[in-house]
Image 1 (cartoon, rainbow, N blue to C red):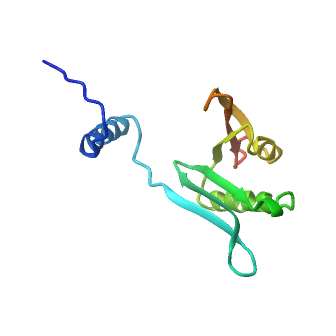
Image 2 (cartoon, one colour; image 1 turned 180 degrees about the vertical axis):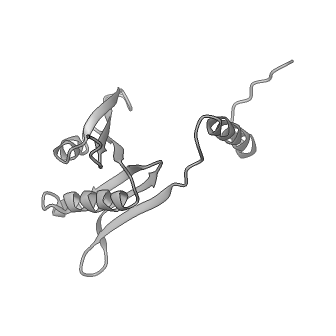
Length: 143
């Protein structure tokens, strides 16, 4: 067999890779999950977004992609409320844990104050920065 390597963007070929990997994964997993979007927005009196959390729930986990609060409104509990609302909704959806990533210049301390614990880090991503991976148990599974 002769193999040729080709670099470049090709959506059709990329779809083949994704489909094949998905099929392989399903031989080890019970089913393919349906990711359900979870979005919570904080609006001011005019309906302008002044904060929000964007994520999804999948495989019994809350995956937080973004949490942002308008600079002038930080340190007033808005971020905490957004996070709590997301965790509450995730709990209603049956999620047992949450995970996220944050850079050293973002909100690691904020998340740790809310019970999130680091499980990994990646230094030099990008150069001069570190990204941290955190998780939190949402449901107490102790006997």
